[in-house]
Image 1 (tube, rainbow, N blue to C red):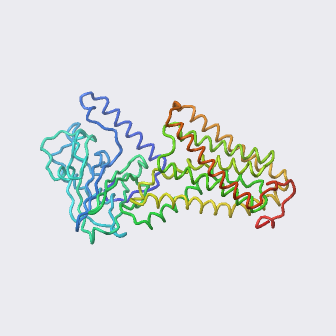
Image 2: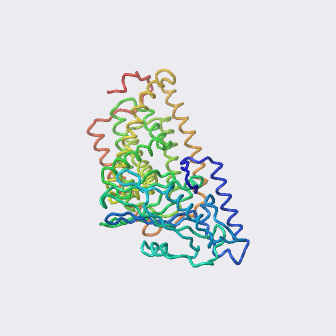
Image 3: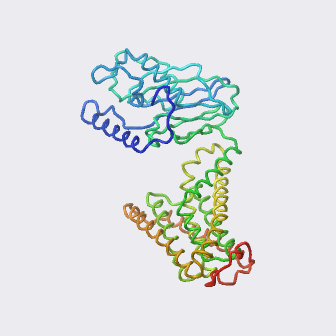
Length: 457
């Protein structure tokens, strides 16, 4: 943590490795001294409370002492010179004021008072706001022995506010060289209503402590769009779905099936209906790669539209679990609007999917007309997609093979039945839609497809 200097939110890789090496060196140093090692905690975390009163906001925060190298705490041998640390503590408070910012209605707040003290690693005052605030106000006993880099800096910052009903945000730019390894846990307590806890890093940006439903919706729509646009495996699967399709109707029905299926498991995962255990995320990642390989191979050998609809829904359920991992860590930023955030995230995924298809379909039409025409072009495109998917599948299987599989118990059986029911429900909807649209013709044609055939039948 640097006093009086803005943090870089995109640290270079070398800085991250340097930070890791410093942590390892600190651990080795602590372990080398048996009499002192029990006081050392290798945590890269800051704990804080934000509490709103009638006309004040309070930030009580605890940060590891080793983040304050620039404050230059005096030392005596292997210990901090606690009795002569007043100036260094003042510099540390300046750094905290600069690197953790509270906002009211978008306006950064400047603390009107700041108090701080050093604390031993064994101190447990930060289990509640009241205990933490009382601890910061209590003086440190003279002569307390704190080993270098093995204690805490505790601070209590007070801000004047216009109204307790304002919109409050928080941002941290502390120690950006640690990246996502340095987390700030904030337990927020408004004047009225229930509090909540969030975890943010220097890469989280400005985070709303009490977001409105509109702000939560807009933020999660953007998050969903960003998730699909950066999910290269999902994008490649979409490409495999539409490579052999020449007409708008089959494309719409297949994409609708995919949308319905992944929406079911995305929503179900948010409500805790996904299987638990370390095995499931790598299994989902490998299954997504498998879905790409299968769809690409089917593009090569020939496509039956109704079979493709059913398989698209099956794989869509798997992709929905994958989407849920991008949402899980960010739901904390929704405040009390969890349902709004959930549906907004799903809407963002669909918006991003539409944007991708609006770009993908004309480009695919141009490629099939001028670069890779006819059936041979379809085979070449599908083979390239299968090649990429196969390598992903190998890499992800290697990760999955290192994870212990669970036993098949009653809970897992219920989850499996729920997935089958979801597939049957989605299948019924999409097949009914396909029947109403009269999709009885083959999805792919060996003939060269004119560019003008894509906008309609």
